[in-house]
Image (cartoon, rainbow, N blue to C red; front, side, top):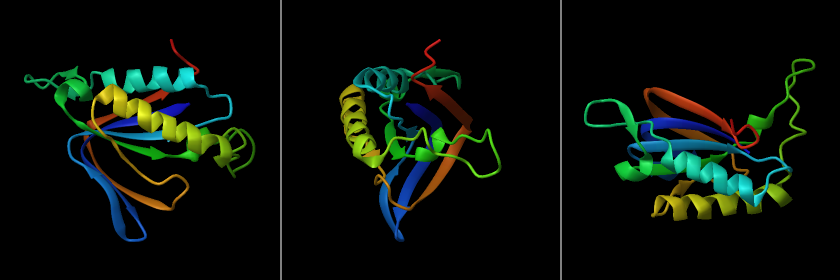
Amino acid sequence: MKAVIQRVSQASVTIDGNIKSAIGAGLLVLLGIEEADTADDITWLSAKIINLRILADENGVMNVSVKDAGGELLLVSQFTLHASTKKGNRPSYIKAARPEFAIPMYEKMIEQLTLDLGKPIKTGVFGADMKLSLLNDGPVTIIMDSKDRQ
């Protein structure tokens, strides 16, 4: 499971010209799921995201988690995080999980993030053509892979 975590001042997801979800200060998380992912990957990654100390404290130092700050979280599925570009110029998405597997995993991640954050999170719609708007704060962008836990 791969995640791109961006600290944002605001972010939103628009589908068919309508805003589906919007948040203020917090984290925008793009999530890529592969067939090898398990419930353990969900638990580990959710805890890392929620407790990642990348929000500014009173001195402007990255020292506060989204949970401790009372911030918001927007989760968007993005299969292209598993793109392979080893051969040619057209990415292969063979490692990205098929919807039959990915949708239940995405839903479990929503549940886990909500539980770990202690309040509901906002989401996109799995498989939809989404337009994301964000104001990256910092900019701060962190990439995590549950298969690389070093």
